[in-house]
Length: 256
Image 1: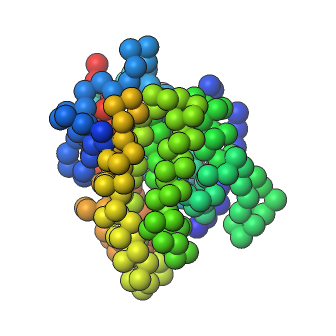
Image 2 (image 1 turned 90 degrees about the vertical axis):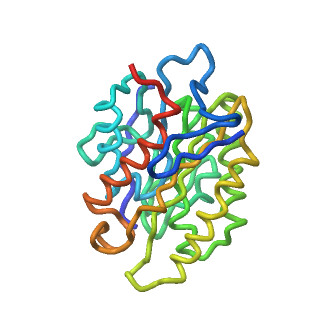
């Protein structure tokens, strides 16, 4: 699934956020979920090619945030944006949730001779207050089980909390995919993962470190009306995904 982002030295009771709704935490609307000392949350995107490249929803997410007067935040991460939006991120094309559980990982089938930082390294380097986690596409594509993927998600949550016990996490229910536009079994595995994420998130969420979900699945479309190849969103799909992510974040962040 493409190539990785370009590496640079960057500056330094769960709820759900469905496609058209805001996030809700334990006990109702989440409000300000960050510690008192956090007034400008550092947001880090961790994902695969849907978030790195050719995934270009990031610029539309930023556009939706700024147009709705959300400005007190900072995107941080290992890589520069490849879509012209200026959004830093820590997503790597071709990657899996399992790979991010390592301190560093390689991908001989996609990026020979390159090494990429995993979650534990990324959170130490970039110190995020909020992690947007959008992994799982390549895991279900390679026929990993839902239980195995959720176990990797849980490891990533623990690693983020080890650096910041107050970290807020928003975990994507991934968009609809159908590799080669024919592999319906992969779509079925993706849906099984998507269906399992909300209960998993609720089980790991705490008042100190809430875990929210972002529904990218429900209103997505794997056809070429919204994707380039039945996996990667085209501009129409990227705009929809950016809006879905905005809906997931709007009740977690604070507008001016």
